[in-house]
Image (cartoon, rainbow, N blue to C red; front, side):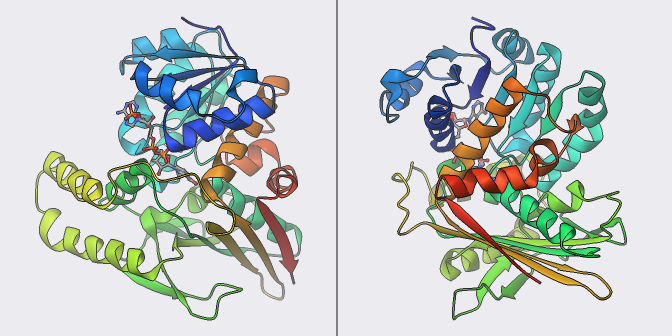
Length: 370
Ligand SMILES: NC(=O)c1ccc[n+]([C@@H]2O[C@H](COP(=O)([O-])OP(=O)(O)OC[C@H]3O[C@@H](n4cnc5c(N)ncnc54)[C@H](OP(=O)(O)O)[C@@H]3O)[C@@H](O)[C@H]2O)c1
């Protein structure tokens, strides 16, 4: 099967994939729910709320570039949810380019953003196509918040913090562990500089009495998005879960990795990290609850004489992700992105528009302070 629907969700049976399907149905966008196991895809799709009114098909596909090209050909947008993207992204983005599709994914891995920027950005731009990793709660919302700060004054320095309360899924846990060996960078005077390894940071989160523990967590995409930006010279991004115990476990794992696993061959490193991740989260968590799974993005902007802060309080990180993907895919079906090639979600779709969509669904609310 190929080209039967404008959108393909790759990894549709995952926790995020099913939420993209749910929101694509709201946007009335026909889609292919694709993955590697028909039974899993069928079972998950059967449980998507309102699915009986969606225009969709299920497709199983092999992992080769050729098989993916065949599936994607004739569609307009591929929503890739099969993380960790440093492992699974390359063949999917290659297939997208070959099939002539826009590529958006939900990966917040900085190493993957750097790879897309360096290797795929120009090639997608030449074809008039978008390559936008990170079109998801983490870090699209703080991307939009950062651009709100840039509008508010002569800001040249950004610090971003993205935190959420929730149960990381199997794929998220695999990814949290998979990025540990990768290089994480911040931006200083438009140069990417390495974060110190295995270091944790106490952060102040508006609305909470106690300080929280955050990590550079692979660096986040913002330093890559803002490299060579005409206004921005410095970007530091931190994030994590609003759960000190989980963050202490991740921080301890980073330390354990540096001391015991880094000396091993790369394949063995990956095997041990995947095994550790599976022992932490081996199953799919329950559907999010707005009264429990809260999110917060804090972006602070500084210039010589100016200051601006944008705080976005929200709920349900995964639901925000499903919505942002479906909204972006819907937009790409109807109009060209604002930027082709490698682009951040706010660059491709507009920061006011991005915030408006999460706000109008009651999933987040942005406030400016300056
Ligand atoms: N930036 C953000 O805000 C954000 C939000 C949510 C998720 N994410 C990221 O998105 C990824 C997926 O998260 P999730 O919560 O949806 O995880 P999940 O529930 O575990 O789903 C992962 C999906 O990817 C598929 N997949 C995994 N490895 C694959 C491979 N080698 N080939 C083909 N398909 C493969 C899985 O298929 P099978 O069932 O066949 O294994 C499943 O459909 C993770 O990397 C996570 O960190 C980011």
